[in-house]
View 1: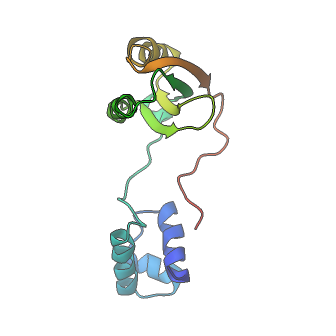
View 2: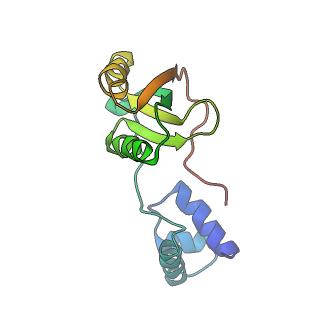
Length: 150
């Protein structure tokens, strides 16, 4: 990636819907050149699909919960089955496999504490692989970004 590619990636992380012409003006290149560069960045796996970010509060999903999970077994099959279950849960926005005391860290987005309690008690804690959990409720979002430093 050269500097123009880096500029394109920075700008597209802020506005994925920017036109090639507007992008070209900002990076000092032609619209056609920007279009080709974007296609190359996509084929190289640098740029993924264009999506729109949703205001969670506006759709009634304003509660952010960080949930740490300890599993009963670290055998490959048990991990794979749990991870497949996580992938199918729409309220789990992010799942990280962790080092240290906890095996996984989940970011769960729900409407309110009652919705989280239902998810935790009826779904997560009923999963055969789960030994224990710890939940942490976000009081306020201080910083949120999807942009990766380039």
